[in-house]
Amino acid sequence: MTNKKDDKAKRVQMTLKPDVVDELDRLAKEWGTTRSGMVTILTKLRVDHDSSELLAEKMKDR
Image 1: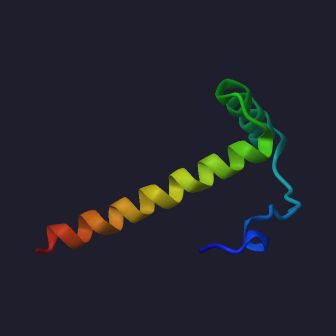
Image 2: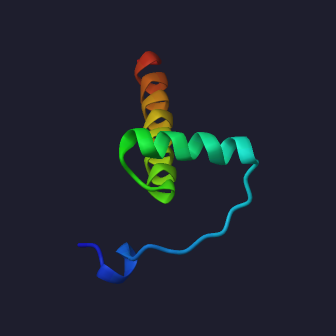
């Protein structure tokens, strides 16, 4: 069971190039979310993709 304290959002500060921020904002608007929500979505997609790639590699070796 996850502790509620562990689920609290943490504030982060990032410096990004203007074109990256523009693209992030465009995607966030398209997906109906905030800039930070889009960062979360993209991060989770990347982690899931990397996990899938690792699993595919392991299955290929069988």
